[in-house]
Length: 66
Image 1 (cartoon, one colour):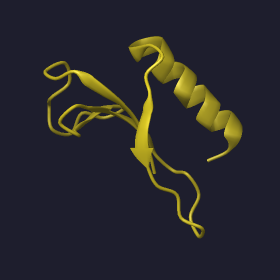
Image 2 (cartoon, one colour):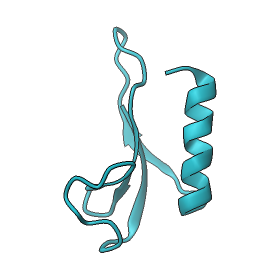
Image 3 (tube, one colour):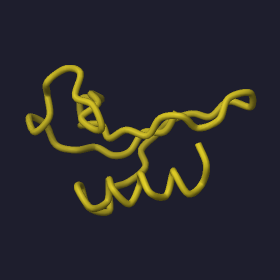
Image 4 (tube, rainbow, N blue to C red):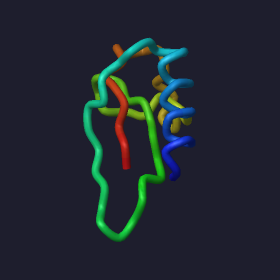
């Protein structure tokens, strides 16, 4: 993911959730940043997908980068 793509995605998240913290993630030497998601306090992804159907049920924790 390029810097411009990352900034655009983080600005979109900021518009929805406010100025939340980056709470975790990981980067590997052999693979670039490919996923930015918002998680709740239970560690469940709520943005951009909501695979567990938990959006709105728990407090937002922050942004997770992988």
